[in-house]
Length: 338
Ligand code: UFG
Image (cartoon, rainbow, N blue to C red; front, side, top):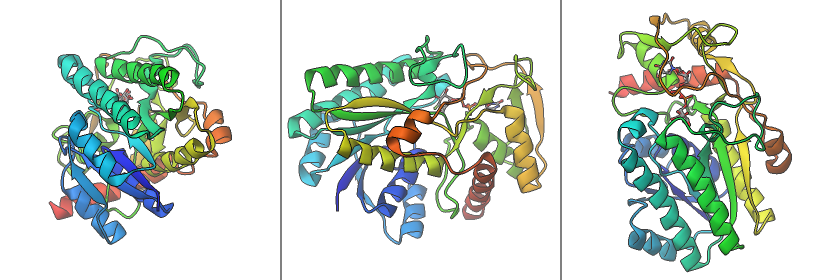
């Protein structure tokens, strides 16, 4: 069974990807320092899979420790998720983001070169497009100024991979530009576990509906969109996880190539659409109010996913309705478990 290192494998996208890797016959080896995830993820994986994947509690910026893991496990490929992702925090503490997100990637690339391992799937983000001139965005759309240090870490990371590819042409990498991951595993065993007050829309919605938060604030309804709220491409986390399995297969067939892929549902829904969908699908009330715009938000962005469909043979299958239903089941289960 081929081993795949999954850095950040205890996180939201990482844990769902570990499940899809197992479903596809791979053995995920998780490296996570648990700085932004907790043990409940492992309990959920245990329930879902009947076992817990191998987990190393290691910081990916620790080169000696990462090298040791690669030497021990002899992985076939690595999926590098481990990174900080809170946009606001990155504005307040940019060095924390540049240090962790860039150094961990550099360490992974150095270790790959040292052990002669060439296959990398990298977690990039639609944030690299900034506010695009046109939607849907294609991979060839220009990269604009990023809205935050977090966004710059993703732009710079892609550049680091391209530069390393030039110097070390065997490096084979699929850089996946995620749009807005939402939802949870339909089993209700794993999902998003935000620390403290959520930054992102979907966990804020579910926490408000269940009574943890008093009220959701819609950040602005005066944008130049149909209903005035921002538009995003919400992608179910299980679809997103499956894209990583497709990317691993692409690496196998495209030795020595690097490429970027949009991973979204391929449609735009507004913040109000997400709220209305939640109310309709769950039958719950949602206490919300329209407030001021949030600094740094782009008005609208959604993906053209033609390239991923053609080259990765991957397409999103689940809808915003599915994501809302699964996120709500997960939130309810979380509260039952405490
Ligand atoms: N929103 C609200 N109220 C909230 C939270 C969000 O109205 O309480 C709105 C935002 O203003 C935005 C939309 O919901 O218009 C989506 O916001 P999210 O915070 O859920 O996600 P972003 O589109 O801001 O995406 C950001 C980065 C991505 C990153 C993602 C996950 O741009 O690169 O967060 O961390 F991947």
